[in-house]
Image (cartoon, rainbow, N blue to C red; front, side):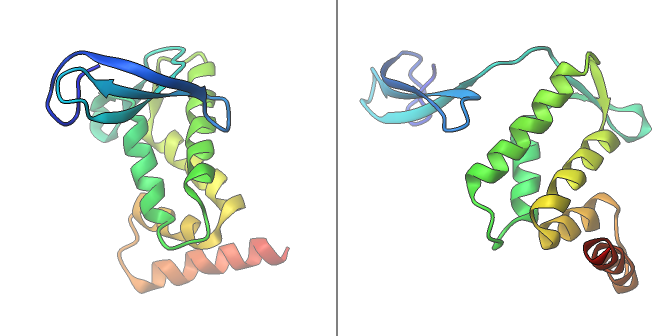
Length: 153
């Protein structure tokens, strides 16, 4: 494992333990070059996923990109990092077990929106505003109205 501080390619594992949700192994490592300590996470990957973007562009599935986009939508909301991590792990697990090697970005977006809808309505609206490309205040109003109606009914 390459050290993020000095780039040395040898490190020693000092401690290993499962994460709270059991979906990964957390490892504390120490660089053999500069002695700096850092943490890595090891996850099960069932298959390589390719995301089909607009205009048929393809790129590898990037868990960190998904984590960042949900984190931005949930910024300053009462969602802790563990809840977001679980949400992303659940989506990734669903995608990997679906049997499909390719998944559309639209499907991923819908999965995120479904998950956020049950967690936090503000994060849900924020994510939807980017995902559905809201361009005017009216778009927010209409979408927020549908969220309010769903919450009441």
